[in-house]
Length: 226
Image 1 (tube, rainbow, N blue to C red):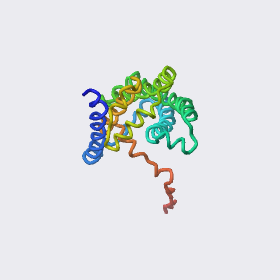
Image 2 (cartoon, helix red, strand yellow; image 1 turned 90 degrees about the vertical axis):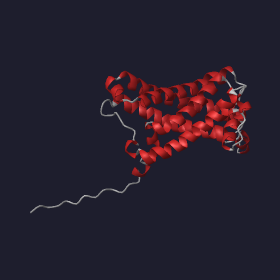
Image 3 (cartoon, one colour; image 1 turned 180 degrees about the vertical axis):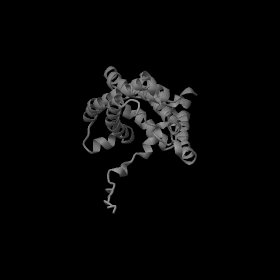
């Protein structure tokens, strides 16, 4: 029953809360749909931490999408054998994971250590920062330490299959039985952050001003006053 809850019921609860929570938040609380920046209080650590985190997290997310969403047989079919894949996952993924971890550590340290920033922060801000730091740390630990200690373990034969089956509505918790604890903690914490997402400042991710890059110039005409 515990495995059934952790690897079937809990993920579906988190996904449902993620979807429904965003819809309700957008319909009822648009005014607070914001990142609520504290840049005016402290800028130096924010810029460094935010830059490192965002530079690292995008490749990390893309790596997770390829590792979890693309079957290993498809990778082999396009010429990416297991050795090449694992080299990329460990070295490239490890590098960007480290960049993400460093950025997240700076942002979390800033939020807790600077009194003015801490006073401005809500309980959800503190929880999100701490949880994100733990998720990134456990991901790095699983990638570097667990893979080194247990090189025979291949998450694409277990975690990836379980993950894809969740979205095919045929979840099988048995795939997660022999998965190392570091991977399990990383996964459960990630699902938890998805459940918390609609109720925190993380919603600003969906409002990234991408159209700003291609915006038209604002033209000003000089008006002469007689």
